[in-house]
Amino acid sequence: AHPPLKYSRVMLKISGEALMGDQGFGLHPPTVARIAAEVKSVRDMGVEVCMVIGGGNIFRGLAGSAQGMERTTADYMGMLATVMNALAMQSALEQLGVFTRVISAIPMDQVCEPYIRRRAVRHLEKKRVCIFAAGTGNPYFTTDTAATLRANEMACEAIFKGTKVDGVYDKDPKKHADAKRYDKVSYDECLAKHLGVMDASAIALARDNDLPIIVFSLDEPGGFRGILAGQGTYTTVQ
Ligand code: UDP
Image 1 (cartoon, protein in one colour):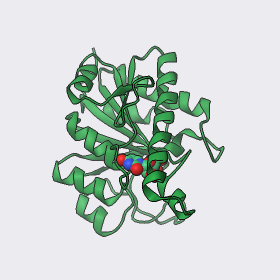
Image 2 (cartoon, helix red, strand yellow):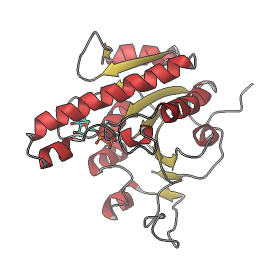
Image 3 (cartoon, rainbow, N blue to C red):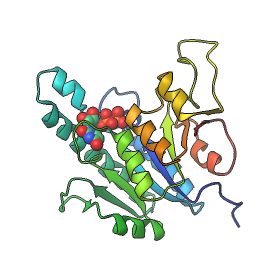
Image 4 (tube, helix red, strand yellow):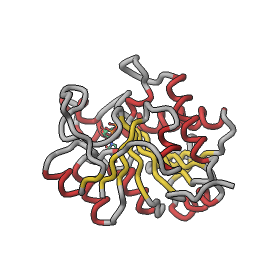
């Protein structure tokens, strides 16, 4: 039998860049496969897993608009990028025998399912990993906000934000040797000090719904699973 789980349903948010490995752009299949294996190990504990993947490895709306493209058009391109990443993750998870659904905020029936809340909940109850794609479906938002929104709608108990470092620091730990990691930090302190956990709208949405954000390192093998089993270093934003 499994030890008691800290959470039974969680949202994993990763950036698109987490899938590109050292390439600087696009998808790096071994990296996608490695993250899929981390997700499988958590699903195998009996945890119901939702995922949101960003699109920054392919296209960001702000970058497009900085080059003169209309912002909303650029944002739709960014949302489409997240669909590609979701499909790549779906494929990697299926190769490991994990049942998944890609659920898009923008209907594209030939590619994936449209978002229907009750249907998504049912998938989770059947232990399918639900990958929510196309962000919130609206320009001017980010996938951090989409992850927070879907986590609330799916009644997730926490958002796991996978990053390159093992938590939230008072300054960039890759630049400052004396940077201090928080074990716990409040939503308001994150907002006031611009601690860069997620964007401000996502943090406010989590705060207003008492949804804890767990910031952890995706580079640590077994890290995601470890936290659910009550181990490891991470920061809880609460
Ligand atoms: N995006 C959007 N609305 C959303 C989510 C995303 O318009 O609800 C667009 C936005 O242009 C963004 C891009 O999709 O730049 C990719 O998402 P994000 O920047 O959040 O990806 P990440 O940084 O996590 O890889």
